[in-house]
Image (tube, rainbow, N blue to C red):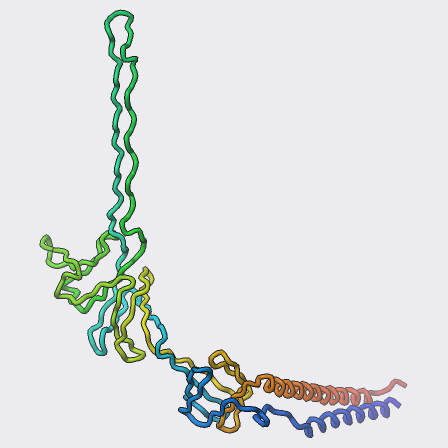
Length: 331
């Protein structure tokens, strides 16, 4: 009896597994297609332009299932940062200039006291009128000991700003012959040290003709060679700090947007559904249609995954049942 029951259950599980596998094998999987999709843009070749609300994009790459469109902003505000000791070119293949950030922008014109002077401390009396009565005519009274000042009119820096406010671009020079130093935060200009021994002299760098240099402050204009574009650009110094110098300039900025089948892309603030038919890309503003197709695909995959679990568990149950059927019975 035990053997026959085990065999029946084993056969039942085999039938269940076979049925589930049959459904898996014959099921037709839905897919995301461009059929019946209303195309806003059709991209067929590289170099093709498309305009989205006045903004022109260009197809830079296009292949089966993927592509790239890019937008070039020719008047973008870009920025470059230089640290202390970095090198800068002012023209292609020209001389390299080293960035030297000045320690402070103040000149220490303040810190002067207007007072701390005493207007008095003089006694008007403490004199005796005669021996009679040892009276004091002045009453030992003090007319002063009052201070007219001791008030500070300054201790203020004419610069009023702390931290670096300027930097210099220094051309190539013989470091064995010349030294460039900064003496203090009050006098933030770099100096060139020349001579030897007791005949050494310090000359402000901008006045030293044998070393090519230029000094810049915040809001100054500056020309430099921009390696990425391969052009000399005109910029403006926007900030100077101990960490570095920031220069803003106008140049080209390229924004790339990747295209992939059954995905979405945002162009100039508009979202499009992306479909590929071979090497042709179709952009549609009907994103809901793409989402509904993706939902159908996800639901189908979930059902197929469930059927595979039915197949696996049925086979395991069949093996266990068959094993129990062949176990010996007491008595």
